[in-house]
Image (cartoon, rainbow, N blue to C red; front, side, top):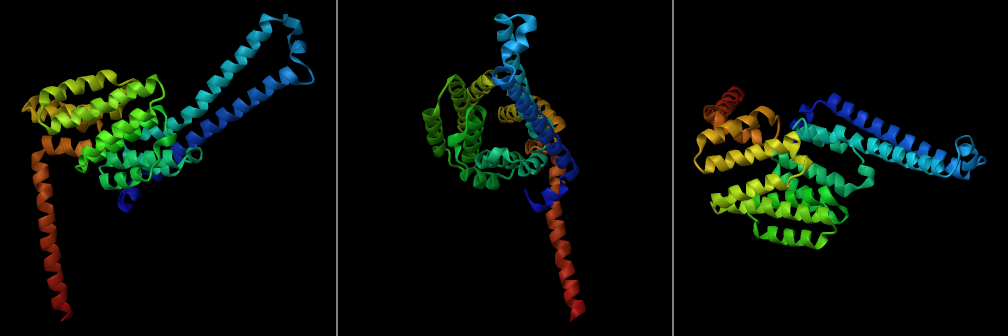
Length: 307
């Protein structure tokens, strides 16, 4: 994100999201610690658990109380972890990668600098700052990533390789992911990564029949994350591009209209605007020439005055 883009971000909104994120995390983990202390006190304290349970009987009641404590602990842990939704929501719900990047800079990620760099690279990619995203991801070590973070790393790096004409490197990334598989979720994510990469390969080869097949496989393999707005916009953009490549202007226009309406500040919106409003793109292309001409005249005027 450039200095101009950074200053355009509403810092009050950044502060509000970070404050709510930290507040929920603090309340969740504080309550978690108190419940743990109370459980230990019941079992090992001055008044052992039997004393607590004497009015209610023993046996099954004791077991139920212990289970209840663990249920409460689970709920509180979830509450603490969902504090980050205030940060991730900037991208996933608001489709604003610039706001997301500004929030990420304020997050500690519990000392995991690689996770922080991954999220910065994601923000930069969806801003359209591909070179900056590549620089960031190249300094990110994925060895500690699991499940969704691992998938995001390899999807992002594969996408950047395709954009920079390094498609041959993508196969190496797929093999690297294959070696890191450690469970069913990783196996499914591996399939998802390959389908997304194969879609890009098919488009590059103008094999649109295969591209559509991979597109539908991508949709069916996607989980709950596919219902997030930024995911819907990304799929709509991919559909629009395929429709355009196949010559279906009406289908492309409908999909691009969805992207323009809901994409907010995602990079896809520029593609949609160029397709839906070509006259604006022509006007924008003329502006640099007019600006250069004006600046040139200004230089000559200033020079003449000084002389």
